[in-house]
Image (cartoon, rainbow, N blue to C red; front, side, top):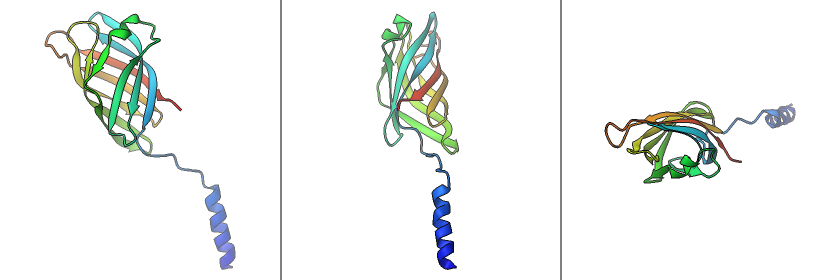
Length: 148
């Protein structure tokens, strides 16, 4: 009887669905974001790379955006610290701290990028403060998906 119970237990373990990895996302994420500052309103291809320990991120503008203005937007002083807070297994909120961005228009912005994550997608919806008072905030909104 004990042998049947052990065989049944092992067999049932083989048929249990695998639980999704609840670790914060790492790797490269790619997508399109809208960047607004003053008269600048550009849809740009962006690449966010998160290190294997999910503690640092680099942000890069990629060629191929519909707006040539994207080529003149730079992210400075990288890598940035990134923090994840899990609200459900494999999803939650994230913050990329102390992002320093210089769009083509005067003033630049410096602040944190925040959003939510689903494990495979980062949903960005952030307003960054101007580096020079009176020049206006920067807004960054869009989704970036994990490249497999």
